Image: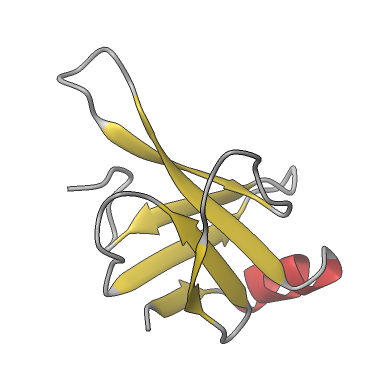
Length: 92
């Protein structure tokens, strides 16, 4: 399982929105095809998500890459979630 690194505020925000976070990768056409992470509190259609963590909240991941050892999750002041793969903003 993937270890989730999140503040108490982030954990509380995810639980307020149902206790699940979906994370998927998205490739860009610029910058040599950097793969960034996108997040949501609802599942995205046409993607197959797998459970990678259940504590401190459920995380489901859709990517061709193997799951990370650590997934850092932060909530912004506007309530948006950002995920960082092994501490990075992109998947390597």
